[in-house]
Length: 362
Image 1 (cartoon, one colour):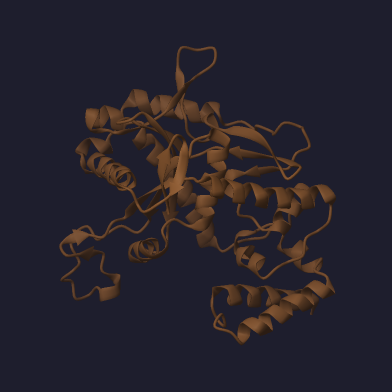
Image 2: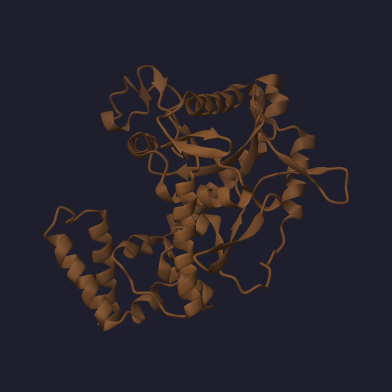
């Protein structure tokens, strides 16, 4: 895992004390704030400034009309075909989703707004104990400033890789100042609805998600900041009181362990390497080239793992699939069915895609 920063460059190394120190101090700052009775009361002046900034940035901000394919940092993990359709101005085919997914998206959007509001309160509430503070930028034409998160921090930067020009736009959940050494940090926040035990188990095993690391890699290219924090928060919380001895709660559902609530937040330090930036630029340049050349890419088995997060172009993808491409996918399906991948996530995704094709063509 990349963890060390020397002269603005990250080195592949063992987990350093700096990484663990930043993770520990950030978690301690959050815990100190939320443990305090004052966290339930927002300062009127700070809250008013926060919402005035939000309102001021409630406006449509089109990209410059330069003809370049523009990737949003949070969308750098989209499949080749979705990128192609979006940039070829293919009309989206919107359809109803499962209701709980809409509520889950709303929940995540609402929580990050409150996390940002809490972050800008922490210096006032905690004083010198606050080691992380939201950076700010002067508000043009006024004596005031904006906190640097989302729209107020948004930047777009043009890149050229392998002869292909494209742009990346990024608006992180926050830019933080790590006060002990005045280091700027990228900040991204993610909610997890899988349950508190499942979230911790997966993060213990895999660490931050690959698509989240791609997002912050894109942000590092735009802002020139390589270090940062990915904060995961479970929307399930531990029981108000210990449930360890509660016989009505099964062992796998208990939310306390050894007299302590299971962590509902997990901050992860990251430091983006040259290799991570290079890999992302290479991939985005390849996707941009297909758009400029106007050649619709084939569907691959790997791309079908992203269909569940593509609400607008599924119909186009299926109806425009060529016979040869379908045959290739069926061959891969047969191969997977005879391997150790049979029935696992990648195989299930491909199988679901092929079933949808069968329904469309029936």
